[in-house]
View (spheres, one colour):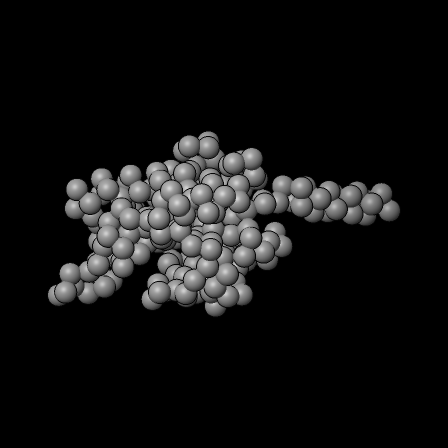
Length: 209
């Protein structure tokens, strides 16, 4: 029947469009959704995604796989900027679903940007792969995305004071002077991400580590 043929055409055309629009690279910034968590230490990954979105005119508002997403071009590559909305400790659920949907390889097509309490505020560390280092969001990504082999940019947010609870520290906001350092680091992280997308990981590590 004509309507069945039309349905098949529309369905196939939909899949074809999704395939053609598939990103070559996913850049995921980690954080917690909601105004309550904006500009906290744990949300620096979200903040870098905002920097990239602003620099490359990418609208990160599409809802897919329990994340806010936006497609665009960075470094000549088609990318998907991702902010998981699962809350930090379940970040892997969203990212794994996106990788599966687009049939992407985390080792060569995933970059994760997140906070690190072992680094001083504003310091960056870029790595091809590595352990979770106690970060629950990264633990969940490693568990659900096939292992530790994916690129990451760690942004220093400083160690917690001795008498503080860790959750209070990472869910707290920076003092004004530290925030200024971290905002500069966010710009550097965005520039480093553009290099990584182009395959220039050694250049990024030499410049920003």
